[in-house]
Amino acid sequence: MAKLQQSYESIIILSTKLSEEEVKALVEKISAVISKNATLDSVDEWGKRRLAYAINYETEGYYVLFNFTSAPDFPAELDRIYNITDGVIRSMIIAKEEK
Image (cartoon, rainbow, N blue to C red; front, side, top):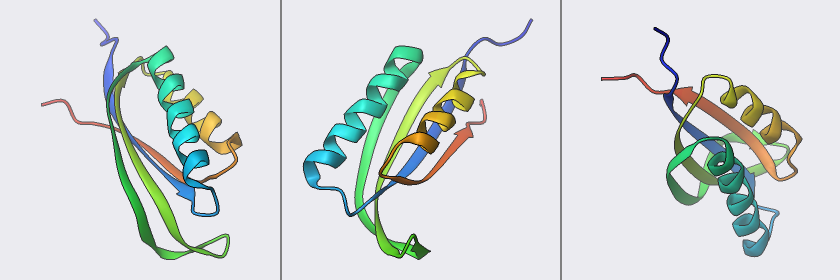
């Protein structure tokens, strides 16, 4: 029988051109999207970090890590949402290994 739920972690890098309020609103918006479609386990804001290389002429980004459990089809939709959201300069979704 196929497993219905899978654990994922997703990290996004937000533009530092956003104000603190805009960053907070964007994190809340993404948290709400994940909560609506999956079980949001944790949100870990790492804050501003230096990027390994410039992205869109930016050398710093605001990192946020989301841990969630969802059906296997949701990460593709989440990735689509990241790609059309202003302020998200990089994103990655990884399926966690089950122990």
